[in-house]
Image 1 (tube, rainbow, N blue to C red):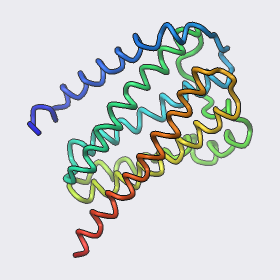
Image 2 (image 1 turned 30 degrees about the vertical axis):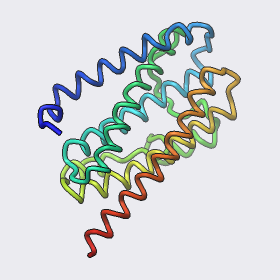
Image 3 (image 1 turned 120 degrees about the vertical axis):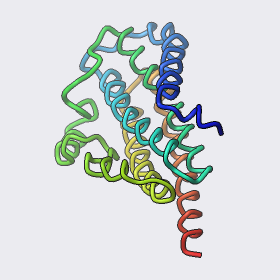
Image 4 (image 1 turned 90 degrees about the vertical axis):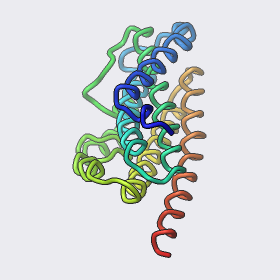
Length: 206
């Protein structure tokens, strides 16, 4: 792959185009329903865009600094897919006329999930801490590959839990469809990440 496509400016441009395309593609659908500001649907959309933002950050770092082609390909797919979905969630929130951000993560999912978030320093399920992100940014090559896999597996497990919580609480088909897609995609990516990580670790041991 040409180093041109690894330049940060190009990555930002790709992300912006994907987010815009997502907004245009789903805007008319999102406009068919209007959940309220305190609804499960609005809370889920706000929290998932925040959750996705960290995944995109991790994936772009891995894409630029990892060394395993299979792992960097997974990272690229995660960055592009979740950038697109961030645009989708923002479009929903704008079309619904609700707040784009909230200071109460996971409040929409009930007291149990909100309490878990409070105990985890305000982080949503699976999110990496500032210390973990700082350590990850010091790594390159195989070390970056392995830590990326570990962080993203945990991140995806948390994302799947959030999507399942939304499915249990929403009757909005637009949101339910997105949540089911999140569960399916991220469970498949967890398996890929585990396999690629194990291959890298086995190669290092040989």
